[in-house]
Length: 365
Image 1 (cartoon, rainbow, N blue to C red):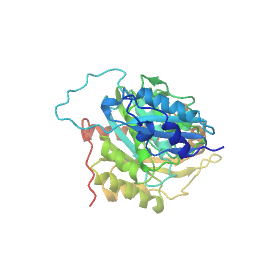
Image 2: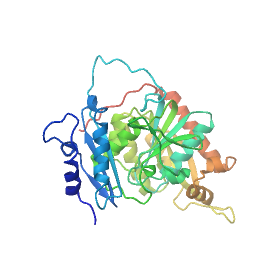
Image 3: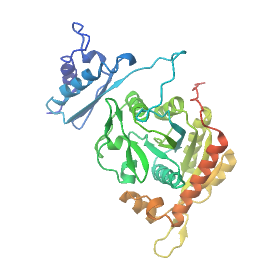
Image 4: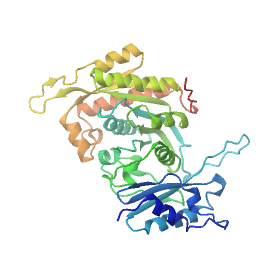
């Protein structure tokens, strides 16, 4: 028997709040409830000063919903709008403090459309930067189609650090967080905008990222709510745009570049993925999607061209196996191409003086 939202709300009505107010229950604090394949997700919206006090209620609500017939798993989080205070004292740094306070540069890897190899580029870019001796993490912000766990061969679940924070998982020296390690690989995330934004915020601010030189964010494709929220709430040091060479993809790449420029996020450069096809039998090349379109577009728009990556069987097979080519074949020419792109990104970060940059304000005209 499938569970429905009404049954969840009735279960929450029996979970009292810690202040003992008559008639008050967790039901009154529940956000939009999402049910997918026997899994139930929602948040309890509480004032920030009551977050610690409400942990017991959160756990009780999770148990109550998990006990319903037809529920295989329940995941309940606490969310709060933190009011700005002019005289707030800075918190003392801690090794296990969650959030991005110790991250020097946050780099968005984005595309105007899906299917252009953005996630593969993001993973190999992160590994190439780490290969130069930098501390690097990668956040898979593509809630609907998380690919990073498969690309990095990640298994298992992240461990908790305290009551609310999570420790990032690790692969090939990278710190990693993704919705793909929190839910099953085949579980569809049938979420509307507010739930996606909540999940992204939690993966940024409730994960113990620690001291990182670069946090690479694998953005969802397109220019919707998630992309705008990331640009608004996160001090992005810059964006890398991934496109294939043909005009159809470049049309959407232009939109992605325009979006980041609209919110004053520097464009670190454009990458031409699937730039040419290398035959695994004869070694000959064929421009299946054209060639040089992204480089020409970068010149037209006045943004850096970071380089091209071929459409090659080795890149595809290593991606499917969870053994990215930068670490599995570090001497291969394709790995060298990713390292050249990484060098261009790092040079752009150094030249932009992005450290300490505040998040931009979004103005809709």
